[in-house]
Structure formats: C-alpha cells, structure tokens
Length: 142
Picture (cartoon, rainbow, N blue to C red):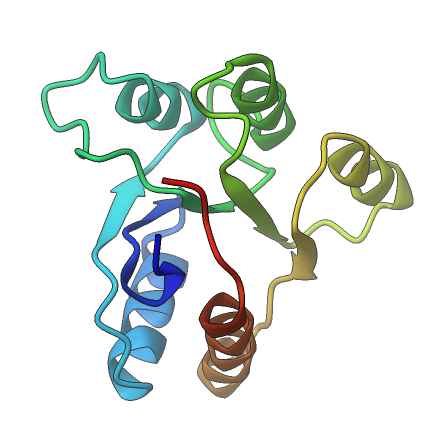
C-alpha cells in the first residue's frame, strides 16, 4: 500500500490542534484523507468498524494524542496492539506530555514515533512535513 495517499485517523480532542494539523497538510499539498476522532472511544469505534462513520478501509496511519476524554491515548494504543486486524497500523503519538513514563509506555506499545506537540502553527507545519517525508519512504501492509 502506498502510504503517501493513505487515509489518516487523527485522534485529537482539541479543535485548534485539529485545525492546525489540517492546515499544515493543506499547506504542504498533502492530499491524505483525514478522519478525526475527538476521544478514545470514538477512535476505537471507527477503527473496529462499529460506528456509522467508520472509514473503509481502516486508516493504516494514526496520529494519537495521549490526553483524551474517556479512554486515554495509551488505552487506545493498547487496544490497537491487542487487535490482530489493527496491530500493523503505524501509530504516531502527538501529545503535550513530555513525561518520560508516557514516552516509555508508548514505545513499549510499538509506536512509530513520539512527538511533543508544537505550540505554534509553523511548528505544526514542520512536524507534518517531517511525517510526510517518513510516509513517502515507508511501505504499509495491505
């Protein structure tokens, strides 16, 4: 699967961060379809196909905040890794948490990367550009 055009699930409860990420994608000319889940429960429903707006096919790239209402990002990540049909998804944590325990827990659950959220729009664009470069290099499973 060509990751460059893969759909992305953005699990983020802050509307400003969602908008900044969307603008960064647009600014960089990235045409990936972005699905948004505003909490961990919605994200899992979308990924497992149990919600009415579940994407098809399931996004193989997930950008996940850790500080979410309901199920935390780490709980979502654990559920993804325990589900055989989701296990191969590339999950990037993008969060405000710099807590070493969160970083370690995320990597122990095989995240592709742990990114501390930038605070300014320009930083979002730089971060998304770096992710885009990575996605252009990798091959995702079908």
